[in-house]
Length: 181
Image (cartoon, rainbow, N blue to C red; front, side):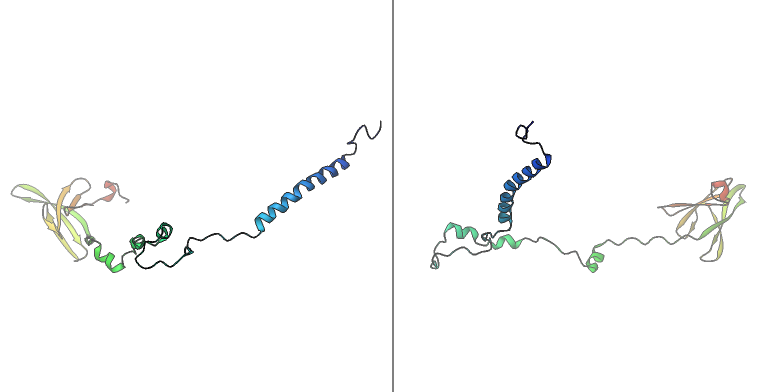
C-alpha cells in the first residue's frame, strides 16, 4: 500500500488542513464583522435638529409642509401628567371625623339579688363601678353609664349591658360560661 492510495492517512495532518481551511474562511469574516461593529458610523439625523432653512420666509407667508409638521404645538403640553399628593393638613381636613371609641366599661358583677316586692320576686344585680369606686344595685331596665341593664340570672348569674350598638355580658361564675377559671 502506498501513501497516495490513502490521502488521509495521518489524522494530525488532516486536522491541520481543516484548521487552515477554517482560518482562511473565518479570518476575513471576523475582520468584516469587526469593521462593521467598531468602524466609524455616519451621524444619524436627530429629531431635535432644526430643519434646514432654504431662505428666510417673509412674515405672513405660509411655511412648507415639512416645517409645519415639525412646529411645536403648545397644546400637547397642557395636560397634567402627575398630580402631587395632598398635603397632610388637607388630608386630615378631608377625612371624616371618626367617632371616639367608647370608654372601657369598668364594671364587675358582684352578685344577683332576689328581692320580693308585692308578692313578686325581682332580680337585681349588684355591680361594682371601679371608676367611681361605688357599689350599685340595679334592676332590670335601669341605666348605668348609658348602658341598659338586663338581669338574666340563671346558673352562672348573667347580666347584659347594652348601649344600642354592642352588648356586653357579665358572668358571676365565668367557669360555668366557658371562661378560664
